[in-house]
Image 1 (tube, rainbow over the protein chains, first blue to last red):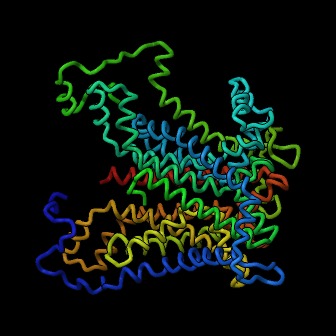
Image 2 (cartoon, each protein chain N blue to C red):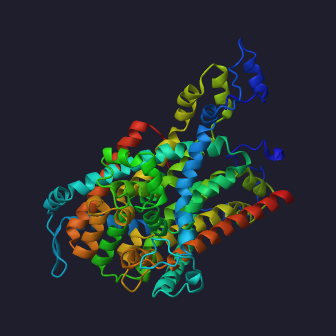
Amino acid sequence: MTAFAGLERGSQGPAQPPPDSGKTRGRWTPYFLLLPGMAWLAVFFIVPVVFLVSMSLQTGNIVDGYELTWNFGTYGDAITQYWDQFVRSFIYALIATVAALLIAYPLAYAIAFKAGRFKNLLLVMVIAPFFTSFLIRTLAWQVILQSDGIVVGIMEKLHIISLLQWLQLLPTDQVIFSPFAVITGLTYNFLPFMTLPLYASLERLDPRLLEAGGDLYARPFTSFRKITLPLSMPGVVAGTLLTFIPAAGDYINSHLLGNTSTTMIGQVIDGQFLRVLDYPTASALSVTLMATIVILVAVYVWRAGTEELV
Amino acid sequence: MALTAPADPADLVSTAQPGPPPVHRRSRNPITWVREHIVGIFAFLAFVYLLLPNAVVVLFSFNNPTGRFNYQWASFSTHAWTNVCEPAGLCSSLVLSLQVGVLATVGATVLGTMMAFAMSRHRFRGRAPTNLLIFLPMATPEVVMGSSLLTLFVNIGIPLGFWTILIAHIMFCLSFVVVTVKARMASLDPRLEQAAADLYANETQAFWRITFPLVAPGIAAAALLAFSLSFDDFIITNFNASPSSITFPMYVWGSATRGTPVQINVVGTLMFLIAILAVGISQFVSWRRSRRA
């Protein structure tokens, strides 16, 4: 390696041009390489979104067909009718994101600084739950949170049940099929998405900075607040986005672990599209969900001021 | 953290400052022990939270439930393990998921790797919109992607089924492949390719002999990621499937209301074991390679 150390990054290399150079790397090569994938994304991601927006402004029904009438009224009606589900989706997603951050931070911290040679093993254990189907694991929470189960027994002993009831997350004594169960499922399912970016940013942190903090009489908590936390902000921002966005649109958890009063907006969109077959209303809800998320994410990223996200 | 004795020369310099750094002595007091290991305790609890459902899935694959639902432990049985395909439709849904998964992986890996190469080894106009187009599908909720694709297929009149599922899966796996391969390429030393050029390798030779073998682990990781995303997807698939094309996640979803067969847990356990085995083998191979080198 040291033999090449003198070569500058991006220098054109040898004094004598090597044979055949420039024949295959034409000006058009990158465009040819990009074209198939970009076309796929354009046709099956961008074009459908255009169709979705157009559908939300059409009137008609599934039998007689639809006509573009620029009927913005659909949005007003749909948002008024499903306002509760919209608000609930964002509140659940927000609680799940905060909970995931609080759980994932110590986890990522321990793997990055305390795991030693078990680092890789522990990282595999973070991803391991992914290896079993999302739906099967969510169904397993029905078993874990059932009323006469061990977990609910422990929660009663520790007075967690009464705390959750006070927080309005448990309307009745039943733990399963409650807002708490849905949020538990959401937090659980997206926890690896929070842990991995946090780990990536913590792992890059130079431990000597913390030692320097200690040497300057900073207490461990002060070192954490002044050194670790600011330097891990890119991971915090990436992790919260990767958790919040899918959680807000998810309806597997609210369907499998909730009841009719925990319905999230994804469930409504699914039902309108696949059972009620009211395509304009369903499309308007879908567009509203996406627009809300884009605005929230833009504001969040702007406020957090992190540049290296993508 | 700061509590350990300094081992680096840099630390010896800093300890030379007036006044020694605070010294903490280990104590047998349980409260002090908890305070010293608080991060580890939280991490342990987080692992319990993460892995508890997997443990339940494995345990309940040996259950012999009394009703249609596999929620209450009744008695030990290996019946489900020896009769995996017994519930109607389970194995056909698995086969469909495998077919879609393999084809979507191949499609997304080829297209995504080409894009990653273009983006990390070439200059071209329109880099910012390209980045945006790759980032957007990852930042869009699945329900929006699924419903918008459904609107497209319904409007154009493409019948829902195997091909619409495959199209959707290639679409949402693509961005993840690009990001994974690009990350691997960014960690490569560009001087290796320049060295190959110095040694009179032409572009094609340099690519196939130097670049590709070095990027291959990244491509393999991207392909594995694409397969697991495709195999596990429910929401997008549910929007673009027909009653005659039921994937495995759709089968599980349906069984949550019809009654959950124990065999679902057997499949879940097998998936877990196969993945752990794959990780173990790849770790072993890289360990042996590093020993030989």
